[in-house]
Image (cartoon, rainbow, N blue to C red; front, side):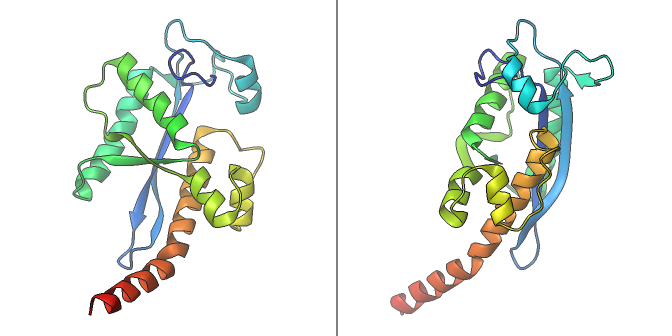
Length: 191
């Protein structure tokens, strides 16, 4: 609903978990996606709605209360944390601190005591794509990476989460040979 996480509505939320195969390669996993009712007194910027195409007060839009949408999303994240023996999840996002700001503000508004995400650590695909692919805009980075991009679907939370997950996995997987060469060289130096 805008750019200010303290005052602007969170209108959609999507989270895509990541899976790792036995060789350590990442791939997109399960997804949670919810339309969200604006919180009472929320600001909604018309310019944001023009970009996202969201019609927050359309009677056909099935939207959850912010606390319900977060709770359902966090249930998926907590389950994956437990399955993987972790203590916290790290949010991966394109301009991830922006996303984390909205999540943290919504958590505070809703009085949620157990946020599964690390409070300040993130993996930012905008930064990573700038370093790996020479592009910081999601659509351009995805295209350079050879992943299909549908401009009509762009800016929906679900689509952007899936595309960001795919991009992140591809970039991290492409770095595996570099990491393996670096660790082999480090091991040789130690011998």
